[in-house]
Image (cartoon, rainbow, N blue to C red; front, side):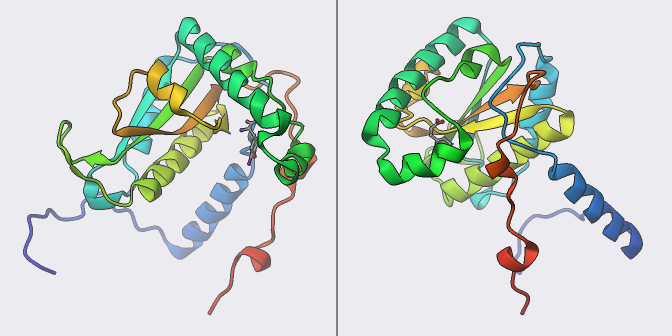
Length: 224
Ligand code: IYR
């Protein structure tokens, strides 16, 4: 490697192989219980939990460590109402035909429609923005690299962290999402990436049978 400033890896933990197997099994058993939920309770969730989960997301690997993301955690009822109104407006067009027949057919087993009451009822919406320009220091205006990959991984960390904390989530990607930039007052060089809904499940929450159908290891993985 070329010369660069570095410090020793001091927080790595090596587990005995048996424990590694157990840990990998336990993690799989736990993450298997994560489901996208569309029926949320309006029970409140302390902000510190959301803060900790976003801090976890902020540790994701990313291009040149520019951390090309911004998380807007929305708790305000007024802002949530605006998001719901705008999202439903766009979704109405989507479900009325913009999606096209094939897409609507693919969504049929999920039971989704243009109504998004959870955007108002869930305690937290987290709007995730990607930054084309930036740098390791806030305010930098350098080029960012692998922005989509970086923000995607951070979003995965966030979903996992929220699940680990005991909350449920829904990834929502209304199309177009530009209204989120306006509502969240984000600058032009940031793009809305995804909207996460987070909270407790409604006591009658359901999981579509379709969503439980996971491909087997043999189907998703090849060992060479
Ligand atoms: N954004 C729409 C449609 C939708 C699209 C996909 I792909 C999904 O997996 C689920 C929904 C909506 O939220 O209803």
